[in-house]
Image: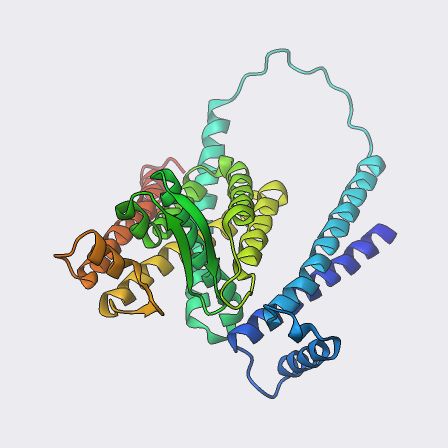
Length: 366
């Protein structure tokens, strides 16, 4: 009884810490409308920061204040919630009667029908999860009240974009001095050497490729999903620790995004049920790939956009690699490639299995 009560209490602490961090993201993005309890809370936090002198620290921001104070509490709550859950499972195992002993079959035979049934069940589950993922993406994009949840996901896409530049530099023999993500969703990577023809498109196309491959693997190889999530989470934490840097204001957004998402994905792979794991990764994959496509589509009509003295990737590619092609044409080519990758991923992971399911029903096999 005590373990269950403690698990509920630690769960509430975890939910409150997540809400606390979410308020920080909303305050940083100016998503909080005036005249409600969340706006009052944000005002009180600013007053508290002023009182303890936190606003005088270099690189201070409301988001950094919320993350630094909320993330440790969230990790502690997750640790004790998991420990109490394990204690409850042990108590249930000790209380359950021992099953009657039976003589096992020395050489058990795997039933072909059972294997086919399991494969078919996983395929149907993947199709259901895919449908839910697209519904979730549609709701996130078309409901302004959910912008609070969409904001960190957009920062994640920027993180993948800049990490794509960094990986392309390393693959082509260059060096990475660091990359950063800012609270407004922009970012940049600083590299030296390497193949610029590979590095420049690796941001947008790298994000599209990451989202497309993750979506394909999440739905076509669900048995590998836990290991895939652990690898992705560990890789994100590693590349963050080595290459992520604070932005020009000193705000460590890229570190928080890389480590935060890395830990969440890693824990999903290690502890979450297959359905939850598959839904989370599929939604993340669709958002990442579609954001890359939409960013390129926006770049077609705004090819001169940049950040200070930093040119956008398409403009830099046009000037350095293909001076005869304008930046808008480069962005259009990249958008077509990104759409092709996403379309192929959707076909092989969704449309093709769905056609097989329909064919099985028509042929009377289901």
